[in-house]
Structure formats: structure tokens, C-alpha cells
Length: 352
Ligand code: GN1
Ligand code: MG
Image (tube, rainbow, N blue to C red; front, side):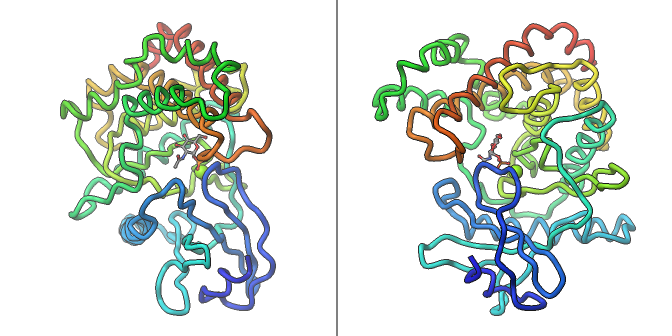
């Protein structure tokens, strides 16, 4: 691991990198060099088909956001936005012998991220940060950002993927997942809600984050202020409604994402709506507001589809720490979907 670290222009010789974070996709390490801390990340080539294109997006987005933060008068833009560390050759990535790309970011000290919201205030703060992130990127100059994962939130495709995995059942895992499969095949077209909106042009495409999990916001350890939105690998054109929905499905329950006993809380959902709406500046459009609850349900369903498909295909996409974990994750998202339906009336009132 020291080999990729050594390629970057660090302020001293790098110490042995240590695994860091809770991400399911990339490998992330914290590394100290010259009395400062950095994050070293290997971009998962099985997930991102064009890592160089991804890095080109990331360079544009981080630079543009830095400019916006400075223009907004923040004295600490390096704590509120990500900073890429260049290699000695002046690039933002290095390729290892296996062909995978590595990058290095400045570690933002004195922050934490949360697997679940502990209070409505925290939920609102994080939601504001994501809405505000979209507001800041709204006028990103052309050309549009590249698609780092084509069809990423296309629920119809995700359903086709499940059917394909079921047809081959290469690991003979479909039998034990019958209940989850049946649940996902019921009302299956609800997975396509966001994709339908996108195709019908009912909502504008704009730069979006597309992985708005609660723990992708860094909070100031001391004050609890939301400082920085991280994990920018899927920043690409999309729907603001999708970013709200992915956040709401990850943060409207007082239980963590992989807990099969979700506790959907109306006050948390209401706080997420308030925070995101404020962060957007212009706020939700009437159509977006009407769809906040169905979109959140749809996102829980699509993520359940993705976890289940990956389980059936032998855990090639989401990293697991024990056998069957992706099946458990699918179960947890299905339980969340049921809870979101049970609370639908209250959530809809809270979204108005
Ligand atoms: C992945 O990288 P991470 O763990 O923040 C996934 C998201 C899922 C999330 C579920 C690129 O996010 O789409 O919602 O897991 N990211 C990618 O925990 O697929
Ligand atoms: Mg992440």
C-alpha cells in the first residue's frame, strides 16, 4: 500500500496506510506523512468502468466548489470541500500494477460521519448540506459531467438485472431468497419511478451527488455543523428528487442501514425535507414535493434490488464482511420499504 502513496507529492515519507471508513465500494486508507493525514483510495474498477473519466469529473467538481466556497466568503474552504493531492508528475491519480487507479485526498481533521441520524437537528443539518451541494453545483459550466456509472439509478434496469441473475442463479442462492425475490417482484414497476420521470423530462437534469447516504456528510466533531459532502464518485447529471430520496431512505429511520428493524420517524423525515428544501435555495418544485414519499420508497426498493442481485451473483459489487450480508442488506431495505408504506399518510403530511 505504501507504493501508491509514494507516488503522491506528500510533505514527507508516508507511514503504513490504515483501513478507514465504512464504504462498500472503494478501498480507503488513512495515511500520515510529514505530520499531516491523507486519504488514499483505490477506485474499484469493477464498479467504475471509466476511472479516468471519474477523476476528470472529480477535478472539475472539487475545483469549482472551491471557487464557490471562496466566493461565499468561507475562510476554511479546505475543510468544506475535498482537496486532491497531485502526484509528483502532476496528475491526480496513479495506476497500480493491476491497472486500478489510486488517488489521494487531504484528510479533513476534527470531523465525523454518522451511520444514522441521532436527532431531527442532525438530519436537517445533513439534508441542508446535500441540498446546498446541489445549489452550489447548479451553474457548473458546460459540458455536462460524464456518467461515471451509466444507468446508475435506472430502476427498470435494476429489475432486469435481477431477472438475469435469477435466470442463471449461478451460486444456487435463489431458493433461500424466495421471500425477498417475491417481495421485489410485487409492484415491481415502482422501481422505475425516477427513471420514468427522467425519461419524460418532467424534472430537470442537473449535477447531482447520487450517493447521498447520511454518512457521506462530514460533521464538525465539536459543533455538529455539516462541513463537507464527500464521496463524489457518482456526481453526474441526475434529479434533485433522487438525491433527496436516497438521503431520506438512509436517514429517516433511527436504525442503521443494515438493521432489519427500521424505525421510520416522521420527525426525522420532516427534518430532512426542511433541510434539503432550504439547502436547494430555490426549494422543491410542487411536483418534486408531491413525489418526496414515493421517490423515497422507490429508492429503498431499488437498493434492495441491487443488494439482492449482488447476493445472487456472488457478491461482486458490494463488499461484504460475512457470508449472506448482501441478502441481509436486501432484507433491511425491504423492511424499510414496508415501514415507509405503513407510515405513508403521516410522511405525506410531513412533506407538505
Ligand atoms: C454504496 O460507497 P458507499 O458505501 O457510500 C453505493 C450506493 C448505495 C450504498 C448503500 C457507487 O455507497 O449507491 O446506496 O452503497 N455506491 C455505489 O450503502 O454503488
Ligand atoms: Mg460512502
